[in-house]
Image (cartoon, rainbow, N blue to C red; front, side):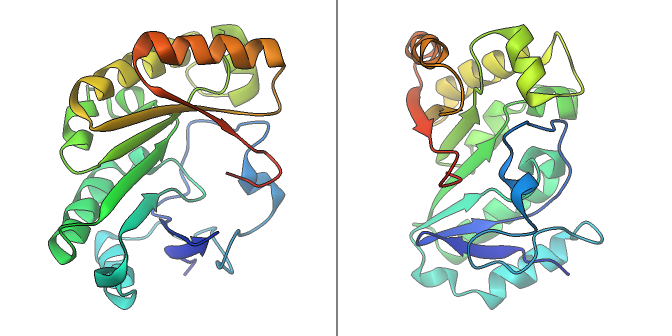
Length: 203
């Protein structure tokens, strides 16, 4: 079994699936089998909810004030497990602050609006904007929904802004400065915080 819980730069992360509708050109999982304290983040078989709960039980979350759903896959590809695992964490530690790192394609993946349900158990939603243009977005993310993914991601983020306490959008510092500034403006228009991520640091 691959690591479900791992730490990176002092943060605690939950790796609950390897499935993802994107194959981003800059994805950190293309650099190796694991990051941070993890020895392996690639699952031979997708973890069950019971296995995720056991991993949570085995890690003392009563002393953790901040945790992030982010691993080697898109967490909303395991939507029910994500929601139930977040609820379970809150039952163990009601004060824990939970962040979801997502590509924002949950509505396409799950075939319905999902932002409200996510925001009921997640305190911060961090959406990977990646690029401010649909064609460039498709090229860099190599997603399975070409022509639709970019706009669905924006709509999902707008919905998150309606329901969630804290919403941010990120781009990685491998795109041109001009596109970084365009991305910043999109975030401002949507009402999300803009975050520029470092490719070298993997965050």
